[in-house]
Figure 1 (cartoon, one colour):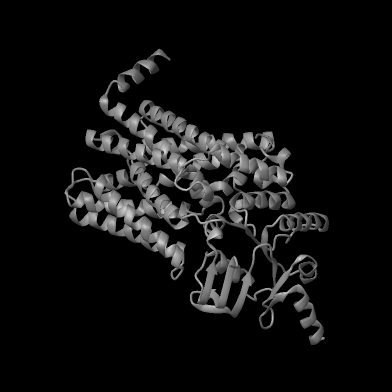
Figure 2: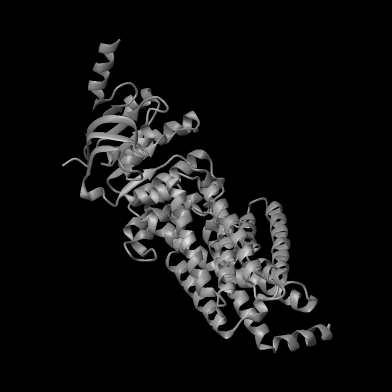
Length: 284
Length: 225
């Protein structure tokens, strides 16, 4: 046991591990906040689609040799989020078909670009990192850390200020619109924030596993808690806890960070499902 | 000045007309029932009146007093069936149109929500989860929310569908009471018999458009028979 702590404290003294923990916690917090909205508004597929877009954008950034690929990735993902939301409203091409088109499209283009133009000798390693985030959280530059901290703070502030309005457009958009709320604007803001969260989360778990980070804590919390506020608070705490635990396990056991976190999330989901069954929905 | 005045209104989706030639006005204190068979465009008309979809043609003029204050009682959506929200949260969300640019509710919003929860007899359910309530209780919660949004106009889309006879009766009585207190009501219904019992005005979009008071509607009906 002492050995374990000794190893842990040795790792924790490295600055890159500290960076990883800070960014990991923030990412987990942000991604859990909009989870309920995403799940219930049937936006979870948009989140999934956008993560593939982010992969394509990252490939472009890598090919053009940018040292900090986040700003470009962020811009492209936000634009796609807005476009997807618009097509969803127009209903000319059905929302989910449009998402599928854009997401598989950018996945393919991204991989193609990385193969043709890559300067690295280990292409499959690069691709794997982008898809599953295996080591990227441990190679964060200070610039990226600060950007992540800033974006996370912006997401949290947005969520707190718009908490009541997010509740409204999620629960009953038509009612809110009939009562004179600017639901179109709120939907747009939510889409932009989802894009920001996805780009943030790519560092931690990679683009394929982002959806897990967003929906698992919310779904777990919904098994046990019955009000929007308690579900939101529970999923935030749960998400941060699972991310921390996952990162520590991965440091000690040498497993990939992203998939370890998601595995912990899955275990938490099972535990919460059992608790929900046992209490029989009696919990307030 | 009427609350809502429609002139030669045409409603539909994507510029395709579903229903046209609608001219009618709703005055403060009216109880208007919109009747007509399924698929005749009642819900489309309602969504157009609420501003959820644009009109295909014609004019809608709304009084300023209801621009940001229409209480809408929609048909239940799938999202709400598994939404984690307490009764209190749902009712309070009706106060949002009063918030302007404030991010949070103030004490007068909460007072208003509390009052309407009392008015609908929901005190004991305040902390319960919305999705676990019975159909009739859910409708009363949504009604309380709508009352938080408005003092003038309630718009309801088949409020009693799926409710058992006794609960239906109670809900109709509740709505009538609100109307007696001065609330203007617009209700979609396919229960014409009930509509005739409570409404002051009828808009029939079934076969050809009829608009007039209940008495005129009954006379019109006699002539057809």
